[in-house]
Amino acid sequence: MSKLQERARVARMRMEHRRAAEPVQLFLPGMEAFVRAMPNHIARSSLFAPVARGRKRFFNEEPLITRSDVVLTYTGEQLDESQADVALQLIYEARCIPLGVPIRINRAAFLRAIGRSTGKHDYEWLHRVMKAFYKASFIIEVKRRDGSTKYCVGDTKVFRIVADLDYDADNERYTVTLDPRWRQLFENQEFALIDWNKRLQIGRGQDMAKALQRLIAASADPVQAYAMSWLKDKMQYASPMRKFREAVSAAVDELKRVGVIARGEIDVGRRGSAQLVLWVTRARPSG
Image 1 (cartoon, rainbow, N blue to C red):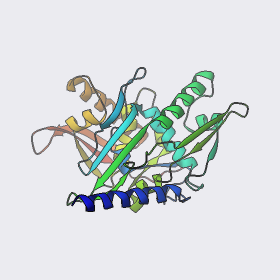
Image 2 (image 1 turned 90 degrees about the vertical axis):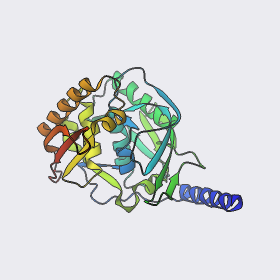
Image 3 (image 1 turned 120 degrees about the horizontal axis):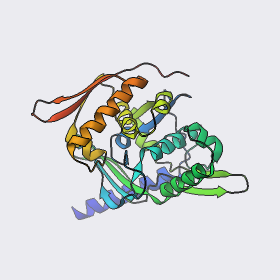
């Protein structure tokens, strides 16, 4: 048995190295100018969360909150929703370039694309985010219904949000390389399409609404229900449940305002526990 396990481990390692070396293009159906995309297993997890600004927790090979069919182990600083905007835009920038090939990004244009200003504070913030992405790494294992491993990324070769990073101060330009294995996380159309216009309309201080938008986009169900206890853990919310309910209600109101959902309410589920129920609007994104 040990020999078979070792052979399987070596085979996975070879497969990961081969995938990492392949210059494949990230072609995502439906990803147009006003749409951004994120793998479902990332969108549903606590990798990005509406945490407070300032000092953040650091994870060291710790499992994050996600669905039961996925194990996501993360090393790096806690990432927030503003950093999720950066990740979404980086994936968009890479859509027409083979993964593994460096992408040149003008920092001012990039900041404007994610709805931010181009002052000194924003430039410094973007630089911190890029460095955080380069330092961060994770392992993601997706399982089949019978419990066997469907695929695993990052267990034998480190998987980083940004595989390589350089900054040219003279030209105010980043050169960013995404890991080719991002493509594997998007395979079988397992990705969320996020209405970028509506995301940019979400007000300041409404990061929980942004987190819910990503979660909603990972499912095609017109009516979605989530246990409040699971949502609280996923969003890394440390305050009491009473305050969390208030924050969720405010996020629901914001999502209704921008047209992501038609209706949302907190009620009691079949097992007697509180749940958030959302009626999703599926209007086609437009410019």
